[in-house]
Length: 132
Image 1: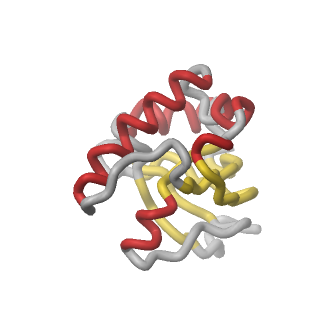
Image 2: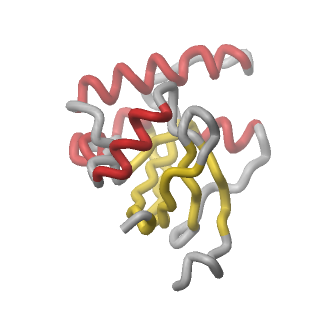
């Protein structure tokens, strides 16, 4: 598909270090991401879908890459595999767990909710389609 004709679902920054995480996408080291399912429910937002295109932004909200969703799966956080965590490109499974717990805990608190190891998460696999 010509990217000029693609329908973009979203433009977003990754996590608390958007420049670093966008750089990992550009290098091809980050091919997955995890988000909290509850936030989609609370905000009445649709889940990402296979073949969706999204624009990755840096911390200045400037576009740096385009990704295409390859798969989307909802599962309890404590059932996310090490292989998936490694596909996020930031470190080992322990790092992935602690980083997501630290990220989700204050966001959940904003909604009067608490972190739970079995909370549902959205596991997204994607490929970078631009730049090649």
